[in-house]
Image 1 (cartoon, one colour):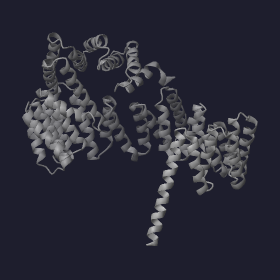
Image 2 (cartoon, rainbow, N blue to C red):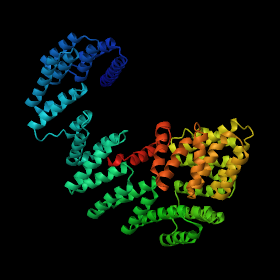
Image 3 (cartoon, helix red, strand yellow):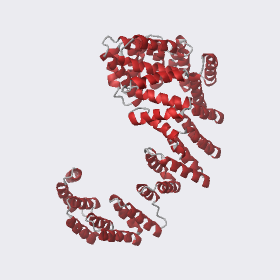
Image 4 (cartoon, one colour):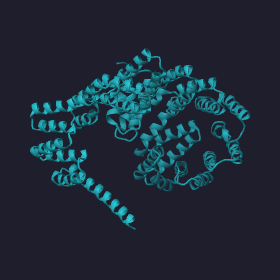
Length: 591
């Protein structure tokens, strides 16, 4: 029983200690230094020579401009503990009183303790860093390493050089540190990526140059890996692929890095380079899973870019792969792709449904069944069997409650209701989904939610919205000509202002998809000129810039459009890409 009481007493004392420390910190942060001082003094009395409490007491005195009390405490602690960091504290106390001579004298004493015992550098340098005495912290590290060559403070010194604005020197030291301490590479790359996200792109240029120099000077593939990582951060997957191929030639065990790069490029919709990388995968592996993955991506890309004349050949490729690899859980994605192709491109919804029903008879786990049911629902919706589609979507919601897949199914229920013209029910679903943990689902839900809200306020009969929803449904059905005609009819015959800009955007996107860029630009320009305060203007600006930049190669017209996205629409989902493209056109990457 005594042991129990002792344990309870100990736990209670720990809890009270933590509570007091937090209270003192709260007072300090709020500027109530007298109250903080009392608590820290009490904590110091009960925990003698705790460095943190001593420094906090000194800081309280200094904030209260009681420099004499601070000096008295520091000298007392120096006498009793001889801790070298206290010389830094004493020097800083003099500095606050503008006594530079005494400040420098004590700073030098602190560095002398490092010269006498290099292990003192840890406390001394970190205290200099706390006081933002960057050059003194550097001097402390340099003093320690000059005496004990086995010590390495490249990482700490690199960050200090960065604070001084010596970016090239910071990069040099970080790269050196990562090469000599390869287990620390992720830490270094994480630090570098923070600088790469800054507004100025000069850091990226300096880092790239340093990496290229190291790659040329030292044939270790470590530098190729590092350079590949750099290009991925810049989303220059083509150059990253060059590095990965060079690595693979020397170390075939790194092949999985190429597969990962292919997936990243595909996820970023960099179709051209993703095609190239997946082509390389097909040529250099016999792994059936990787072969299937590569084939599926290439077929999907060919379907997206293909014409109806190419469809029979694509269908044959899918069937050949299923014959070769069989129809089972391992080829599930390919079977779903086949059903999607049959329904949405060959316009044979029954064939797609039959393919999926056959797939559902296989031994699938609940997530695999959900994927099949999701596509089955999509096809039923395509076939205008709204209620059946909603039933299957609802089954997925019930089977995988609170899962991301369930949220996707919920969004599709809302879209099906929207297509059907049941805006009230769709709105209720979307109101919940716009707070989804999935950013993609939340964005889509918010966009559709706002579309319904905006076009209900101005037109209580929702006449324009019903027309627009039907046009959107034609687009979903891949009936693009009919969708285009329907959107144009809205522009010509419906004067509901709230529907005009989004209709212009839809038409522009359709013309862009058809590679009729001049027409696309005309419709985007109408949004820019007439709906500058609307919620679609950032998209019109960005899509126009992309056409001028990547299709028409007119950088003079692209740059000011990117610039408007950057400076006027910082909350746009296109902001990051607009900034990247603008910098490239400005020549930052080659400066």
